[in-house]
Length: 206
Image (cartoon, rainbow, N blue to C red; front, side, top):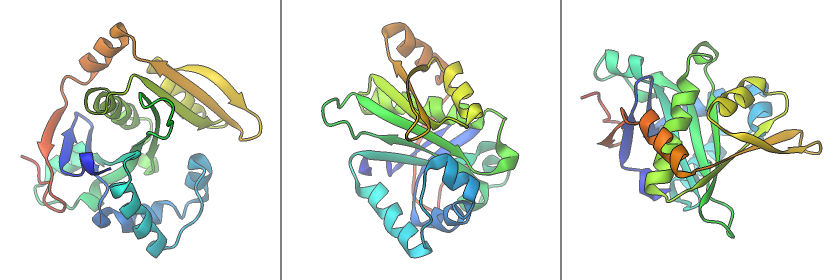
């Protein structure tokens, strides 16, 4: 999505930056993991295919993706490469043509040492806030593999409710409708987030 390609979102635990060619090699290494491919329902791609995929994510109007950086690591040393701070990604799919206010959200914390520390939670909250305030979304869905208990619990804590189970795809669908109280709660949870201009390869802490 072109809309987010020039912005950076700075949170307490994570920094969200647009997915650029700089990030592809690390992302490609992550996706060699059978566990990650299973959890994300992804097919193995060559490095060349990964670059093509990155380009489509940047150009397609119905996909919004941010790479998740470890904020502490990113801020500790000015000039640190984004690739060395990468921990995962967070995505929105705006693919329901009948309902442009619905976004399907997914998050992946690919670095095992960074899981269970709240990075995925903050990344999802920041992405939801972006979806509500910039993209006009009022409903979110998350489709999660039935065996991915940590992710199901995380979305449950973020007020998502289970609405469907598919035995064919072995996944659970959770949904959150942004009533006014939910919207206010979300904005309060993300009131600390700063939006900054982004230029690929030059997002040094300021």
